Image 1 (cartoon, rainbow, N blue to C red):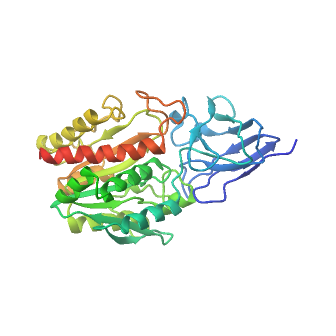
Image 2 (spheres, one colour):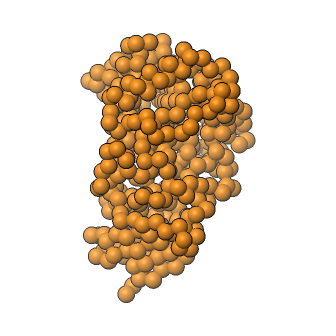
Image 3 (cartoon, helix red, strand yellow):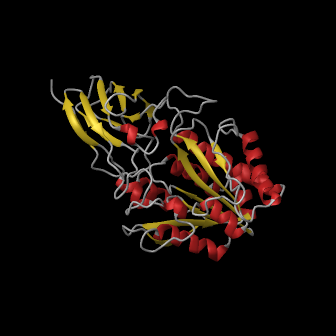
Length: 377
């Protein structure tokens, strides 16, 4: 029986091959460059038609979020368009934590990933298509360490300064799928939510804050192994030029409303994290955030408020994180949106789990909640 072929030498690819025997392989995930973070994987298997693949990812007890593996199922695609979920089991006692993926492809080639990937080519298509729409302008806020542009799309005539930004953590690819859904809404001249927000707001949208990490197949860091969402208090040109460029642009416009879009490895739900614990916390500023959270919970059953992160005690907020920094710096209604790598516990989908498609739909729902929130502001 011939051995399968495994390759990850492409945009956002990440896997290392330890052994292959027929349709079975032992694999490990490569760490982010100059970092101990690792969890994202993305690779293809060839020579697979009609054979049950048994792919064992080992050494996962040392990953960034080992609690992310129980009840997780790997994403799989044979056309790189539709991403389903493969049969997946977790054994923390096997070879320092082993995720076993089993899948029988119809064709010769199948792709596997931690979540449906969002390639840099698709990113450039998204920027090009959005920038070509009437009323949309584009600017480079700066460049990454690898020289890639930090793209910002801007639109709207209103006074409310809204910043939406995603993929500070590049392995959280659902965040850019969310951005695609949000931009489709905002650039559609027939969409009433987009029309309302363009009339009331000036929108600044950064679909990918970390293009280097995205291309390199990192989970959490940029080209120097820096976690961008711990750089917002004192970003530097040497270590975090991506954050420095974005924050400088925010300083020029001010920020009234901000959403930082992410994915969470362990919690099987969509939730928000606020800015409790900032030094300047006030009940009025907090009420604006909680009101938005309430509106979003009413609008979509994909969102909930039971599961989430603990709130920081008074005066203990981490100001290196963007949500806390923007709430403190501008008095903004700032928040972090988290989507699951796993399925949504309250509304499971056996075929796809949480998916690119649901991330896009959530993008529009978040904008609809913003439009309603503005009516009461």
